[in-house]
Amino acid sequence: MENKQYAYQVMFLLDNEEVRAQGFNATRDWVRTTLEKHGADVKVLRLWAEQALAYPIAGRKRATYLMGWIMAGQETVSATKREMYLLGPVFRILFLREDEIPEDELGIGIEDADIDVPEEIEEEYIEEYITGSDKKKDAEKDAEKDSGEDSEEDSGKSKKKEEAEGSASEKTPEPAVAASNEKE
Amino acid sequence: MTQEITKHPKRFDYKDIETLQRYMNAQGRIHSAQRTGLKARQQRKLKRAIKYARFLSLLPYGI
Figure 1 (cartoon, rainbow over the protein chains, first blue to last red):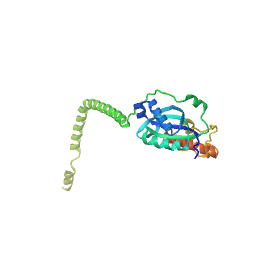
Figure 2 (figure 1 turned 135 degrees about the vertical axis):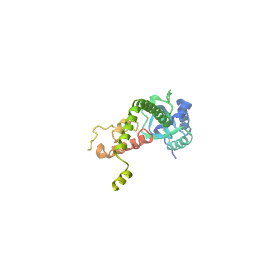
Figure 3 (figure 1 turned 45 degrees about the vertical axis):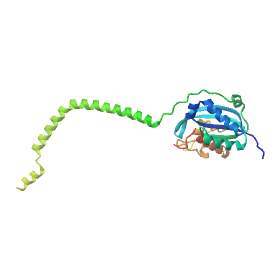
Figure 4 (figure 1 turned 90 degrees about the vertical axis):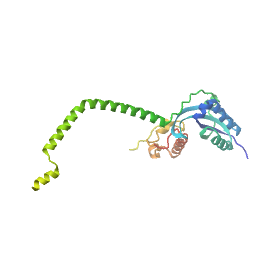
């Protein structure tokens, strides 16, 4: 069977934890060696973006996009995908067959990049931090309010209560007593 | 009320998220061909580009 070579545009979605641990260039080299092992001729491999994901993948909210242009046969695509999904720090792989590799891309080649991958902040931690601080603030505010109100209003309230109780006892007799009075 | 998009790009690229988002509603669904005003072949290319972008988590599947 003839092993015809095609031009492919490839996009890899890499795990930020691995990129941070090993460095971007080491991760890119691993991708390159894996592609070449399966018979691909890697023309371009460069950082496309490090950005937030539209939806979380494997608990990650950010990831690194690695873009490449390769010349490869059809079998290379499936073999590379199989190995990378099993072993590598790769969340997603997209191979798109194109007519030719653009010249401006060919000029880039295999590019080094120094990127600072930000650490993943867990959502629970953020929620706890926010709600915890808010709760503390609210509790402090409530305590301040209570202490202020108590000192001012306590005397007034107690007087009012006493007055109300006194007037109630004078004006309205208890229902059982009232009923017995009516019968007599 | 449907509002047709008058200027279309020559080619839909899955990496061009801003352009693709013009053809989606707030819930992340793709507008119909009647609304986009695209021919059938172009509408299919748009659909494919959006689906590639969704697969790579560049666009959400739904909001």
